[in-house]
View 1 (cartoon, rainbow, N blue to C red):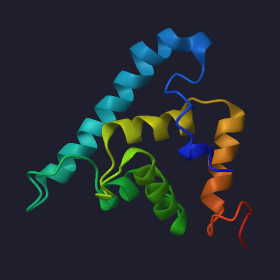
View 2 (spheres, rainbow, N blue to C red):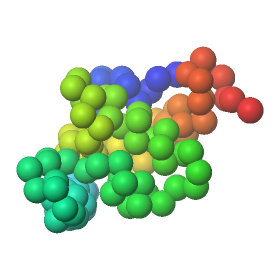
View 3 (cartoon, rainbow, N blue to C red):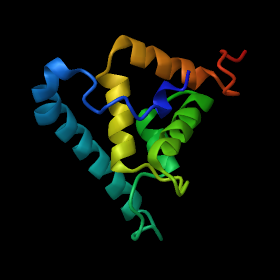
View 4 (cartoon, rainbow, N blue to C red):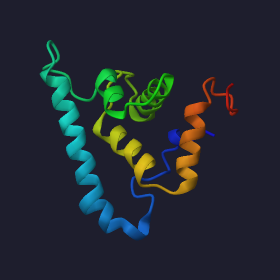
Length: 125
C-alpha cells in the first residue's frame, strides 16, 4: 500500500475545509509539536536538538506495543533523508493530518501500513 510514503497526499487533503485546516487544525498541531519539542529540549544533554525524539513521540501517542514504534518509523521515513530518528514539524503535521483530518481511504491505508509489519503488502499475523 505505502500510502503514508506518498508525497502526492497534501497536507490539505480535504480541500472543501481548507479554511478550517489553515486557521484551526494546523495552528493547533503546530502548538502541540512545539510543546513536545520543548520537552525534548528540556531533557538533559539535548538542548541543541530540534524535533521530537522517539520517547517523546511514543509517550504522546500512547499506542500499545509495537504499533507506536511502527508509526514512529513510518513518520521518520517520509521526509527525513538523514534518518536522524527525530520527527520534524512537517512529518508531525502530515501524520496528525492523516490520523485526525483525512479521508477514510487515507486512514485505512495508514492503519493497513501500521499492521503490515514486514512491508509485503499483506497484514502480518
